Length: 288
Image 1 (tube, rainbow, N blue to C red):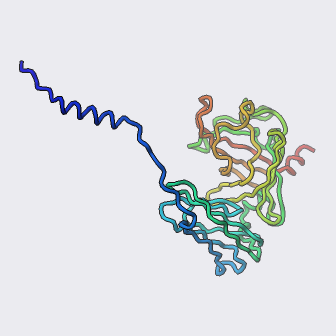
Image 2 (image 1 turned 45 degrees about the horizontal axis):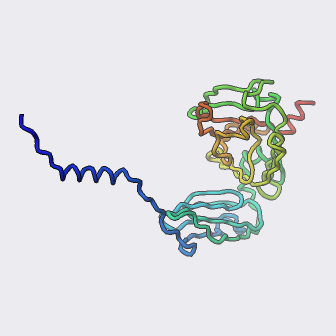
């Protein structure tokens, strides 16, 4: 059997390529843009509303991601149209996420001179707040007055597939028994939100909220709903987003809000955690 010739040069070349490919690459961010390079528009559409209630937001800077904060809500769309139901002064903040990091530009202030309550006339607005000029307070159904209990675990891929309910008088293992406080959705002068979270060291939060009627979602800025999950671990460790909620049910007396447990905590897996609320006045009438 003939011995094969060994090409030493080829072996050395292959080893060199292998070593270089295994070396850690030095990734660097792009040079950050100056805020003067960020092009965007905030335009009040006075043809749609004489009072300037309709505002068009445009990010004209290529290859960037929008971060809008328009005081009554937030958006990441390149172009969005928003509506203010109530007259007043509003501050619109814009930042652009670029290859070199987030660039914050000077905020834009606008004035809305008239109310347009058509933007909060959908029944969902009335159910959650009592309607324009009113406010409504909600509590967790800890006594099982309407729901089976304060929390329901739902299959995130199939909302109709309920894994487990907290039955009347029975709490989930990861919810402490007690008074969770109350939360209020207001439409007195604007979509304002406030709460007192008695199971979280009596923290009180004030912010704003926005309903997406089409998607049936609720967004809260500056606070969270009343909640309970693994209190021994100082809060809800498996949920990343406590800003946007799925609205699974909403009427005059009941409200069901879902958040995604998107982290696998203690091997429990993914789930939709649904918190079951009832209107405070309804709860008081049932307890008389």
